[in-house]
Image (cartoon, rainbow, N blue to C red; front, side, top):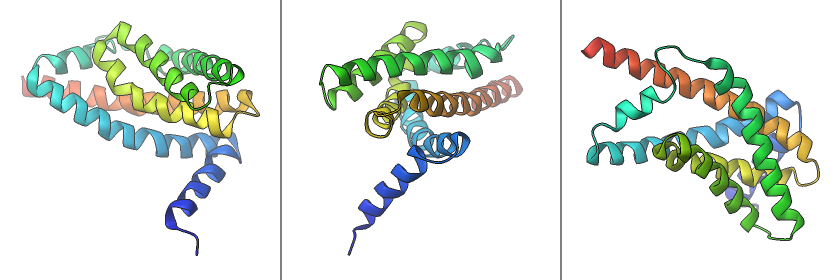
Length: 175
């Protein structure tokens, strides 16, 4: 009898690595964004407990007064995913194995930390899953990996922007 874990891994591999680009990206979004959002919320909650001004830095970091949606939904996901593909594929070529995944996630998390240190912490897990997808599923076709990850990243950013916009509106209503 095949264990439930093996079946779940096979389902993940099949859903994310094959099929239509939108379907694969949507599954990657579900597998990556939901768990990482919970981890990020936990981290932000813990940090907020120690630093109450944190919420202001998070909601203002996406330009709430005049949101620039294009960079967050189109440009950034494409460029960041391309950087992730370059880092992971370079690490794979020099035979670093699974370290490629860690290096990819750490590299992009560090870049996010330049904008806001808290973002670097919260996005590490998302980039870890995206790096795993590249390493395991798209090592033969990095172009498809880039497309799937870019689209999943864009969808992730879209719902994060909606959450941040909602938090901002709730804070405005409370004041």
